Every structure is written in structure tokens, then in C-alpha cells.
Picture (tube, rainbow, N blue to C red):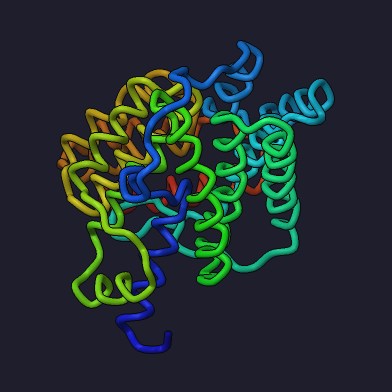
Length: 326
């Protein structure tokens, strides 16, 4: 993996398994659903997710701990605590480069061990329930746990660990879709897989073939991400964020990306990372005053994580400087 083609490929594989690394269920031939229900979550669970996406990462983490106390044998509380930690990781790892705030690499830190433990806990709890009674819901949660681990391994550049966790996630999520074709939340993973795999270079596609990674279609990926936004229960905010980020980063479709991220910022105006992403798009479109407003909103956000708060201020300064004034 020392030649440039392999390095580029590993970087793309890292992104492919960033969240849910799965392929089309049709590729394995077991798509007939047993039942057709959306993911069922309590209002309390959805409130925790909203707290996280509003930018209250510590508050969301504490609320997730309460879910763990109330339901110690259910994966959701552990997944949501890991989700809160993930956005702290994103925040502290992001850099402003090429006119875009984005995390491109993270060192292997002891502080991240708990995140990986939470991901493993969620997967193991779901697998235990699957052993008792198989269900699309628990297959989904098991896949989510493995995918959470995969995306941190990916950010740290650990190619083998990324792929192993991604393959496990893929197996669980293919089973979930096979059991429940209406599980729209799974389209976040399907969409990201199809989108990213279609962006590989010709050389990387040859390597993908020999590694046995299924192909995909960017067009289909975008459709699936939009479906996750429209019909998902747990993932719409994340699907909206990543679709906007990808259209910005890979396709330079700044106007379309701005349309997608707009409702996310309007729903969660206190999320500094969402504000930064929207500001970057305004800047790319030459709308400097609107970009400044977003950057300043990010800087004014009340962040209860000291490291994230300090880093956001640095990102805001860099973003404003790139506009030619603050």
C-alpha cells in the first residue's frame, strides 16, 4: 500500500466506511422483506438526538447515559453517547482548507478509547438480541455499532480496521434491509456507499475489484440519501449534512448543497459545525456577507466542550480571514 494509487484508494475506502458501509441488497439476492416498518423510537430517544444535533454535545451525552440506565440491554443509549462523542471528535479534528471546514485526519488518541468501547457495546448488545430473536431493528443497530467504529478508524487512517469494521456493518445492514425494505434509515449507509464508490479513480477501481468491494452509482447514492432525509427516523439530520458536504467537496454543486443544508441550519441554528458548513457554501458562491453571518453565528454558539469551543474559534478566524476580513 505504499504506491500512490493504493494510498488514494485506502483514503477513499476510509470515507466509504465512514458511517454505514453497505451495498445494494440486490447484489446478494435476499431482498424480500419479512415486515415493512420504519425504525421505531421513543420521543425521549429522538429528543436526545435533537439535543446532539443542536450542538449541545455534553447535554446529549448525559441524556444518552440516562437512556443507558433506563435500558441497559438496548443499544440505542450507547449509540447516542457515541454519536455525541463523534461530533466532538469531528469538531476537534476539523481544519479549514481549500475553503472548507472538514476533518481530514486524526491521531490515535487514548481519549478515543471510550468511543470505540461504546461502538463495541452497542454491537454486542444488538447481536445478543439477534441470537434470541432476529429482527431488522437489531440488525440495524448492530451494523450501526460497527460503522461507528469504522468511521473513527477511517479518520485515523487505519485501513485494515476500517475495512474489517465496515464489512461487519455491511453484513448486518444487508440483513436489516432484507428483513424490512421500509427501513429508510438504512439508506444513509446505502447512499453513502454508492456515492463514494462511484468517485474512485480508474486505478482505484481496479484495486476495488481485486479487493471484492461492490460497485455503486453516485446518482443512486444521492437518491438514497434524499430518501433517508425524507423518510428516515433517526438519520435525516446526518443524511442531510453529509449529502451537502459531499456535493460541496466532490461535485462542487454549491448551490444545490446550500439548498440541502439550509433546512438543517434553520432547525439547529446553534450548531456551530452546521453554520460553518453553510458559511463555506455561501463563500464559494461569492456571497461574502451571508458567509460572514454564518461564521459569526458559529463563533457565537454556546459550546459546552472546551476543546471544541477553542477549535471552533480558530476555524471561524480562518474562515473569516479567507473572506478578506472579519
